[in-house]
Image (tube, rainbow, N blue to C red):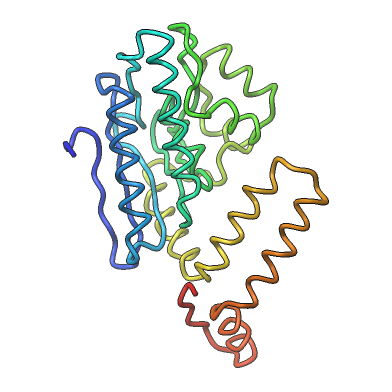
Length: 255
């Protein structure tokens, strides 16, 4: 795909860094199609253990919705956007959104579909679409409400205002806050640490959290029970337990 939409590179430690460069002049459809293809590639690449999603210096995916000029076209765009976000959310590998500048609109929807978000001090977050009579359309209103609550989500959507990184950290929109210019480096170290753990347990743990979040506690705990039992059929669990007994570092295979 054209460089104007993004770049992807993989570190020697198996971390894919996807940098999205969409701006106001890039259509949301083009960016979403590019992202959807990249997700499929990363999901199938065994050498990729974890993923960082970030933006260019000018911002994180500030895209035009030009082309969604009718209710029918807007519905189709939303359908595809939501399909793309679910594919990112269910990729089966740890994902971290890394924000160093403005993260708004579709960019924030992408970040919310990652496992969690880290940012540096200059970062800002919001849904400014209300200024042109629009709301989030890739599932952002629902993911944000589940993360920070209904009232704060309504405030951000209704006002269209951007909040700074300190406020985003205070309301638990982001997990970690770093000094300016350090977010990518810190996030790379963080995801390398995560990827040193059992990929099998990470995948199962993520699936349990996602599946259990919107159901009653008793049913969700039953899902956790069954997933916990499933771990004991894996090589990683046996290796982890033996390494603990041997007082050595485990050598996980993701199996």
